[in-house]
Image 1 (cartoon, helix red, strand yellow):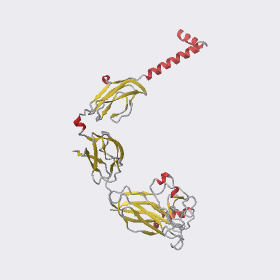
Image 2 (cartoon, rainbow, N blue to C red):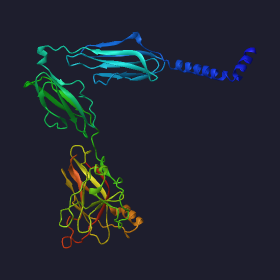
Image 3 (spheres, helix red, strand yellow):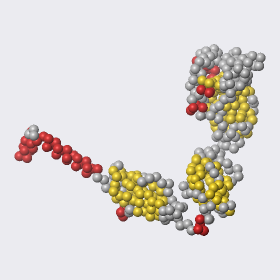
Image 4 (tube, rainbow, N blue to C red):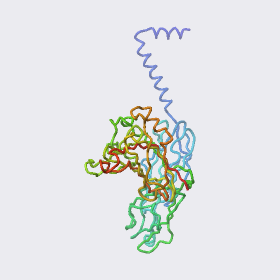
Length: 424
């Protein structure tokens, strides 16, 4: 009780208040410092991981009282660490790849616990390759960082180095043009780039033959790429609803605000749709193709417009394809012809359609929507012998629709909802 009374007297004494505050601050500070001191150690106090030129893999055991991270001094392709972080006691594995150079190399690893740098440092050291004069005249290969297996179907571009002790060249297996190199010959160590195209077919591989000083190297290198399911009847290979176009009005008769294809944004043009410049006299030397609210308009008064799809990159090998689409003509007084075809491989089962449906009246939103929904708005044709290089082509009437050259000076066609499926 006497202690409490003394404490109370100190607390109530005005001169003592600053001193009490300082003591409390120091006590809190000391507690925080103690909380921040985390324990970290590498088992057996390992400070160096030594590797031969052939490479190695070693699992490191750590003891820690907090969240730890491995932080290499710099990023190196020849050292792989997995995982890079953990919590409490744990392990991580260091994989050192083969060193094909004569020069030794090293990489320090630092460690953090709860984002505080620790005293422990682990140095990775690797011997240089032992290369005598005879060996220097006998090897040519890709550097070890090149991925030559499990290449994904999406393809890739990868930089690497040809390691060689003389003049080298490579030959890619005939017909395997899906894998290319920035250069196929050189002398000594040479940086190159390998590009593997997207694979829409089943798994494939290409054989790479090397020559060193014009002598064929005995063992070819195989580049393999994953594939996809082989396409069957009914598989969809292309769709387009043009919902990424938001210009003008959905009402056919309201033409203000529609956007000529040459004025589309960079992202919209990157979709791959193109159009032909109309060179008819007086046509203005531009493509008469326009974007509206989620659909395309082909043509204007006196001049026709076309639209060409991107390449059908998802088509495997050679296929017959069913193309369905929706089309509406501008109005009762417009001509009604739509011409279709392909650029590239393939032939079409029919080359034109009479687009007889239109909005009535064509100046309301409801009638325009109804025209799209009508059963007669859907059309189809077959492309025989299509490949991944085939493009679909639609033309509203003809390019020259001037009076006397075409049944009507207007042949405006609206186009939407294109789908392409495999038929056989």
